[in-house]
Image (cartoon, rainbow, N blue to C red):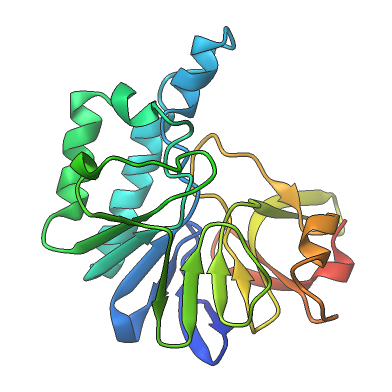
Length: 223
């Protein structure tokens, strides 16, 4: 796997193909929109999905943490799909989260799906966090130096044989919106008007998650 990087406000971050960002100088790993227990949330409304999304998402997160061994993890909001999702976690999944938090600082950013996270999950809860020139929050405002989530960016790109749709980082070098990390999380086209409200320059790039590396493609070339 080739190491890919992403620059935000003068800070170079490793863009992991899982959809996480790693700030090496701070030993900080950032993930967004885990949407844990989305499957059980849908099941409660009569929409049956295989109930394996939480285990799958935590398993992927464990691999990313093992790969980078961060001293701090920030989960950028909507870590849980609804206000009571944390109560539906199995004992196994609770133990998995506790194991991921061991020996490192952990910050849960509150999101629109999970605005009132309980402290018993471990770690601390915050509305946003600023480290150096970077502000970490759930909903993007368009401010310079911002890394946010919420919008679940994806990009559809035409190749010679077919079109491919993948999750992506959306960035213009001054701010970035992260892809959703959750196994069942959907996506919003980077060409949607929601991104135009945040990125006011022509330099918006979709950093598309490929099989072996990140592919930087101008948003204007996506559809």
